[in-house]
Amino acid sequence: MKGIDSSHVLIAPSLLSSDFTRLGEAIVLMEEVGADLLHCDVMDGHFVPNLTFGPPIIKAIKENTEIPLDVHLMITNTDETLEWYIDVDPRIISVHAESCIHLHRVIQAIKDAGILAGVVVNPGSSLHIIEDVIEDVDLVMLMSVNPGFGGQSFIGRAVDKCIHLKEICEERGVDPIIMIDGGINPRTAPAMVRAGATCLVAGNAVLGEADPIAAYRALRKAVDSAQEKA
Ligand code: DX5
Ligand code: ZN
Image (cartoon, rainbow, N blue to C red; front, side, top):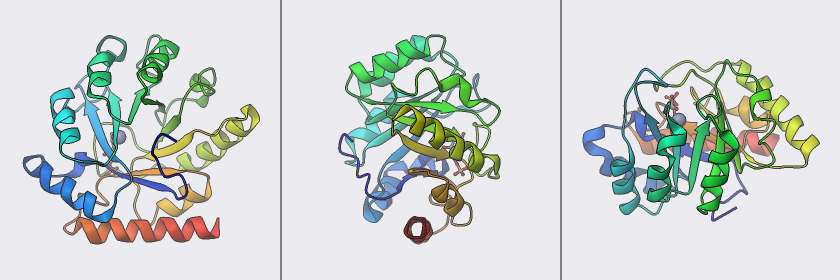
C-alpha cells in the first residue's frame, strides 16, 4: 500500500514523547532502527486538552527524513483546516470521526490528494460511527487511551473492539490498516497483534525511554513474536 511494507506489523513511534528541543535527534534515532512510520500528534487545545504542533513543524520534519509521516489530527475544526495538512503531503492523514462534520467529504479530500486516509475512533465511541466510511478508508485507528497525552494506561477494551472491527472488515470485504494508539508497550502489544492490529503507535514506550533504540527493538521483538504465534 503506497510504499508501506505490510508484511509485518508496523510500528509508528510517536514524536509526542520526544524532547521537542531535540526533534531532529529523535528522528535520526528512528531512522537508525528502521521505524515504519513517524506518528505526528496534532492537538489543538479544543478537541483534546493539550496543544502540540501544526503544519510548519510537520513540514520541517518531512524535509528532514525519509520515514513516511503518519499525521493524527486531534482538532475540532478538521473540515476547515484539512487543506493545511494536505499541503504538507504526509503519507497518512487520520481524522477523528467525532470531529468531522462531513466525514465522508474529508476522507475523499485526503484520498483525492493521493494521501492515505485514516479514520480514528475514541475509546468511548462506537464502531457504528465509522461503518458508513469503512469501505472508503485506507486505515482505521482505534484509540486505546483517551487522546491528549502520552504515557497513559492502555484501555484493555481495545482488544475486543479490534476483534469486532476485524469482523466488520471481513463482512465488508475490506482490509484497511488497523492502527492502535495509546499505552502500547512490549506487555500490551501482543494482545493487540493477536486481535488483528496491523500497526501500533508507541510514544512513551519508545521515545519516552532513556534508550529509544533499545526500547524500539524490545517492542519490535514482542510484536514479531506475537505475529509468529498468531
Ligand atoms: C495520544 C496520542 C498518542 C500518544 C501515544 O493522544 O494520540 O499518539 O503519542 O502515547 P503513548 O504510547 O505514550 O500512550
Ligand atoms: Zn496519536
